[in-house]
Length: 346
Ligand SMILES: [Zn+2]
Image 1: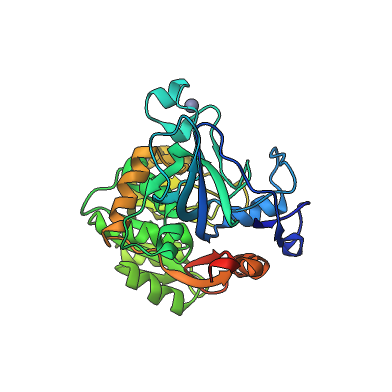
Image 2: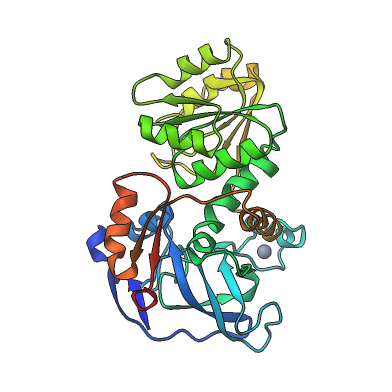
């Protein structure tokens, strides 16, 4: 088969699209004929190399994909040949204390397809059957491939961890990013008053289309002072910050008393200073969130399939242009998901 791959970590020019041995499904796996894959920032971080992650080379990147089941291992009963499926990347053991409580993304051996093991940006992928979600016939492959990672991440972060309620106010930083656009749509769906930041007016207009009630251009204005003004000094109930050190301190300033700061990542680095006085005086909760349980994945994807949520697409490229696809994420050009299609499917 043809696969996007790299044999060493590095800049985007390490990426190649070429021959790779056909994968064979293990006994609890299904073989998927990939129709479309989508990129996440994780693909860029994985390609550059993540501390503590030692990959078997060559590595195939990619955590999001959708396609048709063409073969199944002997123990598989969840899916059968011919099924339309989307891949959800989080692999859990099903047996540890956290899995037994249904907390799959807390699994002791939790790992992600594409980050810790070979991914799905290839003509075929062998994936645990538990990681496949049925895709209805009327859903196109691009939508099915673009939704799983970002929508499950935003869904668990807002609905389970921050537990947002109708009428609450929420500030979403980086609202035009993959998780950001999903978070805006989900917060709007939950009935929250949504404040969104982005770096250009074009991106802000896009956040408004996704459901933001108020927008702030953080490149032109100090968003913390802007938020103080917009909320008459009260602040918001929830802040979503996956930016990290660049925004963390301001995010705690933007919270109302009793507010929750929720994070699912740190794109500007892992270490930030926290003003502890502000944490106890305002009685702030700081909440981490990663991916989602398998049940949460089913819940949010059913709302993508019925049209409640829509992953916005920036560009669809052949897999042979994966280098350019990575570049679009790294250079933060535009907004929406970048999708790659096997050249043989175009
Ligand atoms: Zn487990």
